[in-house]
Amino acid sequence: MLARVVVILKSSNPFHDLKEYFVTEQDIPPAEEIIRYDKDPESRIATITIDRPNALNAVTIAARRRYSDLIFKASIDDDVKVLVIRGIGDHLGTGADLDDMAKGTFGTALYEEFGIDEDEDVSMPSPRSYRNGASLTHWYGNVRSGCRSLQDFKKISILEVKGYCYGWHFYQAADADLVVSSDDALFGHPAFRYIGYGPRMWQWAMTMGLRKFQEMVFTGRPFTAQEMYDCNFLNSVVSRDELEAETEKYARACARTRPTDTVFAQKVYFEIMKQFQGESMGALLSAWLETMGPQMRGDVDGRRSILDRETMEAGLNNAVKDIDEGYPPEWRLSRSGRSKPSTE
Image (tube, rainbow, N blue to C red):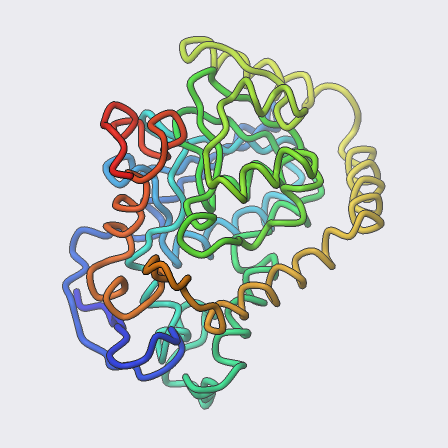
């Protein structure tokens, strides 16, 4: 199968001067295989399972859209009161599939991101326009994009975390009602080091506390499960071998406590509280902040912006790894990188 991917040829502005080329996509499974769903009408507990362990459960554009659709349907389904979200393998996940995300960031590949058939009579904003990039960053604040979908969920959501909880998976941790974690988990977003911001900035600040979240943003370092528990981000931290049983305990208790109509009313109450705190406004502000990226310039000491031509052509994944090695070992995103000496 062929997939459209774009690279930057001339400009340091990631929305300018694009050219398309094609690569094989045979290693990327369909969304239905990455995001699996099942429900038990008797217990009224449904489960979304992220199943791409060979890629650290990285989610594609199509997988995010399926995830959003499943959450919407579970919110309506009278057989569901509790939704558990978990990952297969050693990690919950490391965020979006960066190569797949790159193809959705530019040019006609935006059609896939927005779920618009390229045969439809819809013209995308010019790559040179502000709206080209802004349309995408504001889309991330839309519940249909699969980034903020849990905000509209009118049932109880429980996220089970283990290993890495980075990027897109960290968005889900901010928006889930309850988060149960293994004691070896790490939380954060690589974007704090290669861009400096992400779509759920406001919600992370509200759920972690401003001071600790600022530390995460300014240092770019991941936080341990114990640190996240200490700032009230997590509900429970247990050993890896106790994790599934702990999640099931929470899920069954939530499924038994009050009728689904009561849960709906409770969720509306908490949603109003979140909106009073500025959750939706924060999504708009984060989108605006992300559109400012092309205006950011590197420092005069030679430390360049990661989103320049050379970086995008070499691969964003490689750049993230290279930058990680410049930090103290205990502050690195990669577990394997923590055993290597610093390059600085």
